[in-house]
Image (cartoon, rainbow, N blue to C red):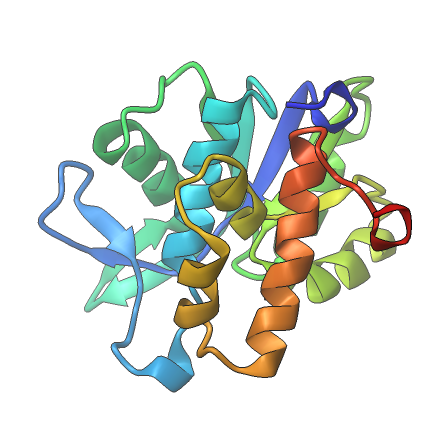
Length: 199
């Protein structure tokens, strides 16, 4: 990892979850419909990869409560932390959860409160498509941390190839352009980025 892209702590934004027959008892929610895919599994895998890469030594997941069944209320952030520890082998010392309202705005409010008196360097991680909305609310709450797409960590860790992600996103021209941007960020994470103007 390039030292310019390492932080004392990182905040991961939570996503919808559902019950599953996994060690944690949870998995990212997916309706099964391609047009209703929020790529939560990529966000989760990105959280795993960023810790493996040394992007940070401490990841806080911010998330609110969700009703995932009849009278079955679960905190999303808690469920994600359980997935990271139980299903992916992440150390319990490396992850914690922050309770927030169940929305992007709620996440930012909780992060603002948690970091209010902190002098630690910090960054925020979520899916690439989610960053514009997260930025909108982060500035509204006075949170001025850099944001990174979870998918870039998959590329940096070689967990996925650009071609893999292009296929996941539909192999459209927009998908290819989006993945190209993610690849540029992954190169920067590794200290290997060279702008097209310098090539």
